[in-house]
Length: 209
Image (cartoon, rainbow, N blue to C red; front, side, top):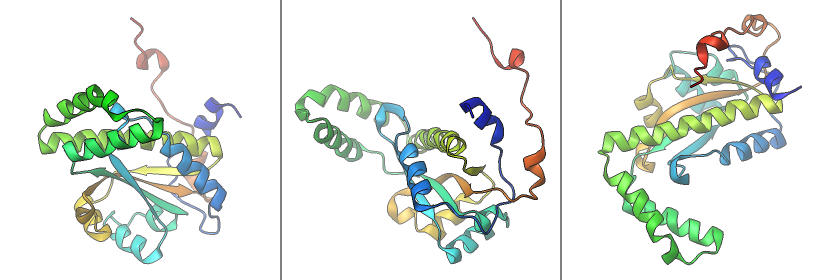
């Protein structure tokens, strides 16, 4: 299938097949794709948790209004935004860039100043919101990559972020939950998989100037 056909095939899966799990290869391919997600300045100001433990997922399910996908999917993916975006965080990132590209760090001074200027110009709430926006970009890559790989997914915002943070011990890690996605394979009797995809007409969606 073409990419368009695969994106038409995908939907926000409501019921997962409990007997079908992603293979190690499939999971790694999906995570590799998400790892390549673009982000503002390339900073990737988030971390991604892959939750498989049944007890942990049972607790998270209660913090997500009992939604079955949390426990029934093959894995639950949690995108967690960094909360400690400061000069030290930027320094560590620039160190990594210099090492990865074999560049003299001094040549990246302007790049570092640009990022620090953006970060320092925001208050704490704005920095966290900025980090969460980057996590949403990664979510989009996950959904598209999952469709390309024939993996079902359900992006989810219906949960208590403070409860997720507490259950997963994210505060101590300098993180906070931004958005989540369940991944796996659809159940044959998921009625939502049989529905036509509904989107705005293209002439209403796109404005060509």
